[in-house]
Image 1: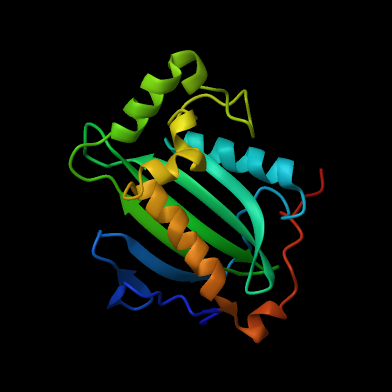
Image 2: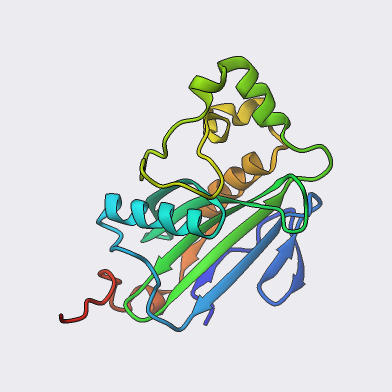
Length: 203
């Protein structure tokens, strides 16, 4: 099902079905899952949803940069950005941004993935030098008790994007903004029963 329309952004070329690539090597992709969404809470329960996403991402070895509920094509969607270590590399990170539009029994996701290449860690080093370690590392605002994965820190904040316009995190945010402007939702998909939270089992 092509639940989202308008995903093919300028600057991206088709490399496979529902997969596009730009000159930076960033991968844009569209997915449909014919399964009940694997989300820890409903979209209108922001604190529980963000807490669950933070814990899940840390357990997978990554870090949740940000998560919020926005409208995509007029339909509520989960917008999130996370970071993961580059597999098989001693350093470097990949940043993944996505919009997830959940319905009661299925979901669609548009995702942008951008990886560090060449010299890594420059953004983090510059920001830490400006702020010092005490102001750089902070407990995760969505789940302060969560340990493990990649640490939450100041350099991932969008206030630093202007100084690092070609950084993969900046590119991910730019692409998410472009998607928010361009994408529409298929009316048939939008009309499906909404996701109201994970199923509960009787004790």
